Amino acid sequence: MVKHSQDVLIDKQELHELHRNYQTYKSLFAHYPGMMYLLDHNGLIQNINHFGDALSKHYSVTIKSKHYTNFILASEHDEVNHFFYKTLQGQVTHFNTVFLTPDQEPFEVELVNIPVYVDNEVKGVFTYVRDITEERAAAFALRESQEKYRLIAEHTSELIRLVNVESGIITYASPSHETILGFKTEEYTGHSFYEDIHPDDHDAVIHLLHSTKDKPAVAEFRRRHVNGNWITLEDRARSIPYGVNGERMNVVVSRDITEKKRAEQELQSTLKQLRDLKYALDESALVSVTDESGKITSVNEKFCEITEYTEGELLGQTHMILDSGYHPQSFFDEMDMQIQSGAVWKGEINNKTKHGNDFWVDTTVVPFTGDNGEPYQYVYIRKDITDRKRAEELLRTSDKLSVIGELAAGVAHEIRNPLTSLKGFTQILKSRLDSDSDQEFISIMLDELDRINMIVNEFMVLARPQALAHEKANLQDLLQNVLTLIETQATLNNVQIITRVIENIPNISCNENQIKQVLINVIKNSIEAMPNGGEIILSLYPVKNEVIIEVRDNGEGIPNYQLTRLGEPFYTTKKKGNGLGLMICRRIVQNHQGTLLIDSKEGEGTVVTIKLPYRLSDESR
Image 1: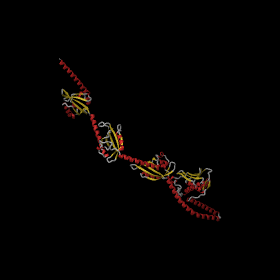
Image 2: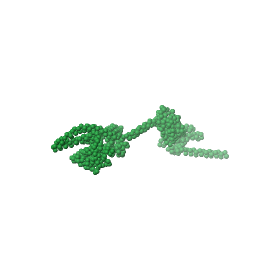
Image 3: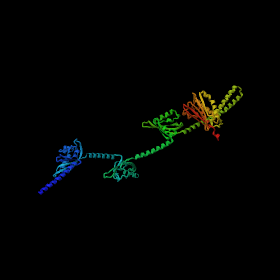
Image 4: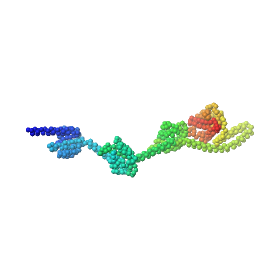
């Protein structure tokens, strides 16, 4: 009886252990985070966990008692069956295959078949399933990326190296090293990254490799070429957090910038030369730039200084803002035609400043043409030659005066001898003839001989400086005498003369006849400038130590291009003039230590201003 009780107790313990094992199995089957199913020895599905439902998108109620091959891609059946039967023989099998969803969509899985033993005999198969679709896709992408990077590294013109940060050893060098530096790739792999670096750049490279933790680092340094020359490289290093064995690695990509650096140096040298040339040009010349339509787009400081305009007043204007009127329009038309054809133009131009002062410039106009051959801007380079032109003008005038002086001296000498004889014989005749009519004729002849003598004396003014007999003269009386002589001609030409004289002007030291000659000449010119009549305002007033005589008319005026040449020998604005009258007037005024100025505007009239000192300098000593 006791023995029987012990057998029953043992059976209960075994049953309890069996129950515990069953619960363990059930817990594993239910909570395994993947697909698990049970097959019998015929391959029919006996059970599947709920993770399997989610993975396969099949419900256990619809797949139980069905053969496992119903859910596997047909092309995989033979291989899967092979592993299934090996498992029935007691082997654990491990392989990959392709499952199908209810919609017949394939997805890759990893299978592990484990034999199920009952009483030491295989009665079925436990299968563990893991979805490896994403892993396979990631692996494929990785292989694809590796292939791309391999192609890039092997065919790029840049240097690529993998460098161990701590040791500085190169673990990979791209084939481009041989092309750029001349050494074979094998001569870099396993060697120090610092071996072929210029000594002066060593610290920069160390800093490059050790400053890439947070962001890529960039540096320029030199490496030695196989021929001994130094190649300038621009290196970019990026850190790889962990290498194969956990060490920190850098990917260093280098680009040959030797030619770039050389070009930069040449560019800097060229820019310096251009700056120096611009400085020299700005210091010596007036420079301006216009667009294709002739509008000013740029001027330098000297341009503004000479023209008296500000930059703001000039931009957007044309260069005709400086037109003095000296040159005819045809002059500028010819210049425009030449530069618009793309040719360089050179010449001398008379301009006028903002405040009306004339100045001369030696001008070069350089057209800048585009790809179509058409100018898109013009550069004007001007040199102020006003002083040179004045010197040339004085030289020409001096030469002319010299020739005229020599001619006048010769003519005066030859005329005076017969003139003296004629005057003497005429005076004898006057003493011998008693007839009143004869006496009248003789008087006229003597007056004309005196006039001829006065003209000869005028020639002598041109011939050489005269020791003039200066005397105190009242300009008011002198001016009245001149008006009396000129009144008839003014009336005949319908010209009214208005005088504005300041009373009590001090007497001046002068030669009355010569000053009278100047005034007659100037007033007659004003009358002849008004063929249709007009008005002359004659003013006389003192200023400091000078007396001013001003003759103002409202005649036709004189163009600017003619105004600057007035007073030149043989240059005249009259059809029948010879240009000597105004020249003689200037010489007389200069001999009196005064000045004669002419200002005129075409269509408005002319003002002649004569300034004479009260006393000549030789009298003040």
